[in-house]
Image (cartoon, rainbow over all chains, first blue to last red; front, side, top):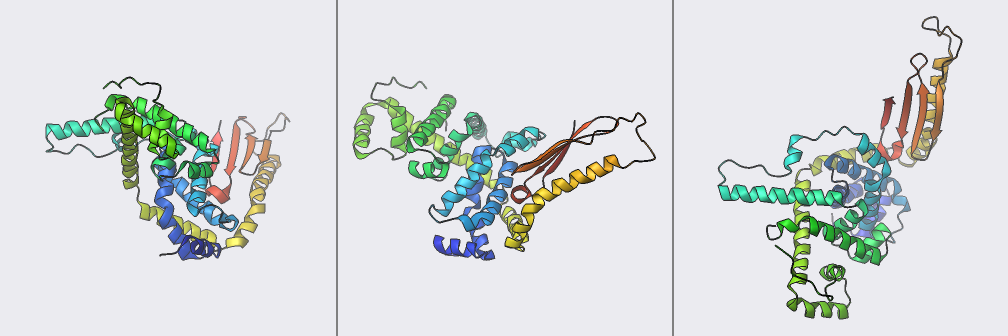
Length: 191
Length: 172
């Protein structure tokens, strides 16, 4: 539905169901990706998506329109993702990982020739190394990196979302890139 | 592959800002004129591109593994359930947040204090019931102790408005 943002916000404040549907459809993938980028946990991220929209639903009356709706949702998502209760829960959770999660991607297909198989193997190795390096970043640096790479936000927009100064955004982003670059340096030329 | 040597003009943080289009015009021109003569900085920029590409590839895989329409459906159902009572529901819920743990505490006290014909403790030392309890803005916690075995039970309740009903009972 081609509603502009002020119209959507007004309809959300009236509690119109179709407006909520539009909100969810418009933003749920981005909210999921942001949550996943910070938690690196699919199950956790699905829960966070639900919480973010339920929170938005509860608090839309307080939304003054000074920031963009996306910025507001990003802020809720980051807060939810960094929330200590989740971390606590995560520590308590049984560490059950299905076998597929070890593979993280497509499986080797029968009939692929040696070259393709080697390529696929290398690609998977790189993805695994990248994910590991990403997981080793502090969550706040990861949040900045993800907002940049997924949303393509400017430093100023990231700063508004995370309540940070532009300089801090720049240094965290640089730190994240430097650490990832170091971790992936062995694979230079293979990506 | 080894990174070529870098000189003092090479600032990785500046390159990171250059990569993101965050330099002012003067700084940008400086970097642009430096790049053709510096293979080391060009490699750093290529690395930044590759990292972004890698991240987006992982993000695509993560997204492909989620059934977004099922997620949307479940979300809208929960919203409808909450929306049905809207403001009235929320004003009702606030006092209930306190009411629930208080009621449970009262029931637990009654349970432990009522004299029972069977399994009564003969030595006259009354069993402890609630050791401690507290209710905050996001959680309520109560500590119990069982009468005979003296096991500690932690009753934990999260804020139901934000997280649904997530009670957890642990037996230590």
